[in-house]
Image (cartoon, rainbow, N blue to C red; front, side):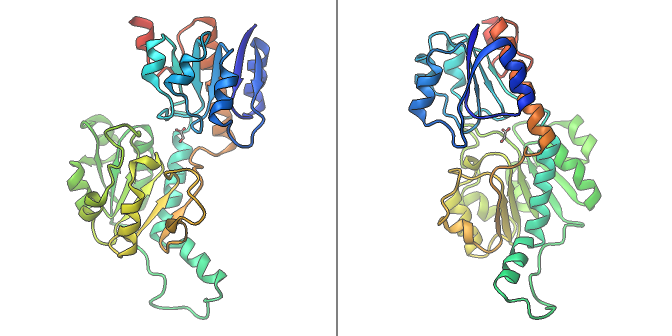
Length: 324
Ligand code: GLV
């Protein structure tokens, strides 16, 4: 039987299906396997089911001579050296689509909570400062009529845009190319990156982390944003320069930030962003609903099993392994 390493406990329905077709070792968690442990466990395996917390680099791939498939239980795969996998002819799977709605919901939770200063309100009460209704207290940003700028109108960006209709917002989007059909469907207008920054009251990030998007949001980008604007990131922490973000929030230029992803993850408890007023941080829970995580696990298992059988993966990030 094929041997498979799963880097953390995943929903049982998916694991059960995998166990019927392979000899499965599951890292017991709750923390990810340290890198050297990961390498040691993957070395004798035919298949790997991994998470965004696992560094699957060229050395790890090279030290697993039997490895025939890598299946990531996430849509993003910036933790995997896909080029190294492709060079070995190893298909890499991921889980697009099933987490779109859950992640768009969480994005809106952050937009609303950051714009209306929900966390600041909770902290205010916890500090014993709620003594009266204050006509000037905890004033936030009114979303109705404001402009939402979406960076990356992919599946998740479009789902976030769809939800904006209910809030009566003007929509802009940017990305490497215009997407007229998707944009027309959600009522969004294309703008170049700088125009979007200048005109948006809320900027929400939905692009992948690549060398081109690493620290896309740096001091220069924050300086271009409207005074009082809000930044939302549910994509990848590395897209934002956190030092520049801290400066932009601290000096009052930005109205706040809602982050479900940070760099690093977790952000150290004593990181100044953690305690910063107007900054709300959640622990990378965009896809964290029972239904979505179950579907992600099932999709990751389907990719893995296809790879072990020598069939094309239903959701493959490097389909060139089948043609080249
Ligand atoms: C989560 O961040 C994912 O990429 O699925």
